Image 1 (cartoon, rainbow, N blue to C red):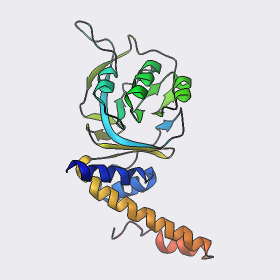
Image 2 (image 1 turned 30 degrees about the horizontal axis):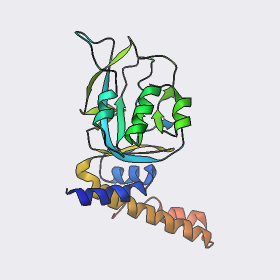
Image 3 (image 1 turned 90 degrees about the vertical axis):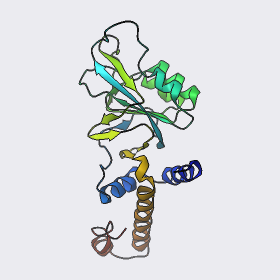
Image 4 (image 1 turned 45 degrees about the horizontal axis):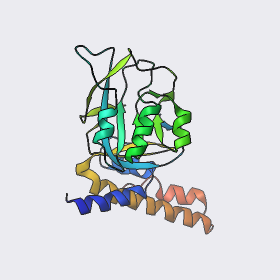
Length: 223
């Protein structure tokens, strides 16, 4: 896919919500949106290419290592989203205030963490979106370390590759594979339009039982 076409698809995707994108993914047999990753700093919808980070339990072996997330921030472009696999079960932050400042300065759109994050007040003051499982004050030091970045990660049960498109809002977090952007965007736009027409019918006085019963169950057919 050439750069201009990808840019246009990203712009169209940014106009959609996670519900329409999740329905489109469902209709294509792809993993739908993930439940339980909430915006805990600012309630801002975000979308953009994923820059991935994979965390592991315990301490690294060998010499000195970089602080988790720093290499991904340096590798990111304006509008990217940092996506962190932090599903080891260790109760500690996979993201914090210094990373938020660095990401904000880099023009990163936000962060999605499959686990806890901290320094949420600081992220809120900076207007930086943090999507995660919960907040914590516990440091990552001695508890988890960065295994790799720019690699495939697993968020809940969805495998996310670098460059896949992340979209997050208050309803959930969806990941769109790069190779399926065209299909997903086109279907999500059609779903959004069908729902708009349903709402319009309601406002014109059609009974909700008729509108929903007539259209909703079959709205993913023939997209």
